[in-house]
Length: 101
Image 1 (cartoon, rainbow, N blue to C red):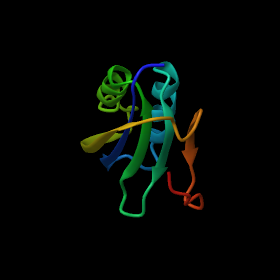
Image 2 (image 1 turned 135 degrees about the horizontal axis):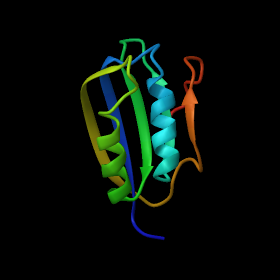
Image 3 (image 1 turned 90 degrees about the vertical axis):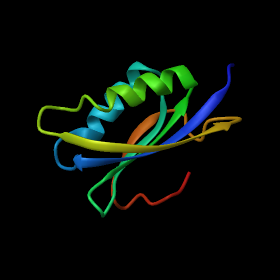
Image 4 (image 1 turned 135 degrees about the vertical axis):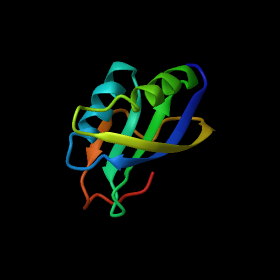
């Protein structure tokens, strides 16, 4: 297995209630990304994504092409190398799922 990385992103704009987390999941599955997307109380979406650096870069780029009702104003990201993924899938977290990874 190649080097693995974790990217934590915060997506701002009109990204809640418009299918943005579902978009994240579809793109993650396409590029074999593991992690989650979760609405935050400040109106942003937090995305934790794990995979190869190459796949994560493509995933990041795809997040700027949201569903038609969504508007992405910006994405902040922090990347670090990891030894193993924290998940083996990509899920949409709901507000009551507050476990940290």
